[in-house]
Length: 103
Image (cartoon, rainbow, N blue to C red):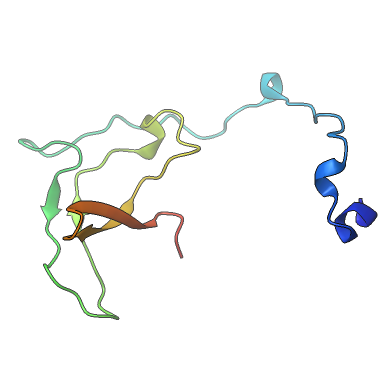
């Protein structure tokens, strides 16, 4: 392996054996997620406390919205819960600039 790395030939190595996957032996110690509740006359995703139209560098942005428990979202391994987007006036589209995985 070290020789292949040094010679930039890792892609030429054989795949090797697959590790065992112990799905039958897995268990979860987390309690079931509670039922999601939302304020009357609202929907999940509604903004309750709106952001300001303009911020300067160093400002703290805070927004409050109606959300449920992420554990009710199904398979979320390749998705994100939160995105920060910027509207591009030239293309009239929203561009994702940060996600919940961003520092």
